[in-house]
Image 1 (tube, rainbow, N blue to C red):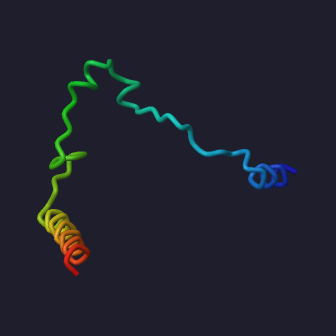
Image 2: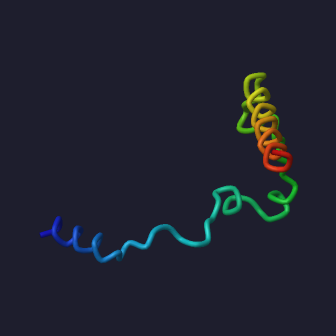
Length: 75
């Protein structure tokens, strides 16, 4: 019976997905002045540094985008 009810709810699209407004644990745990003072370093995120391979992939993606834009513009 539970399985049939779950199947009916899935087919009826009762489960609409996650909330439209998301909350973060950091914002819930600390006062707003601490959150505003937090500085995010893109080179050191979650304790990991961007290595040479990651930098190469970033440059390669920029190069491919540039080549595509030049081909679109000049043929």
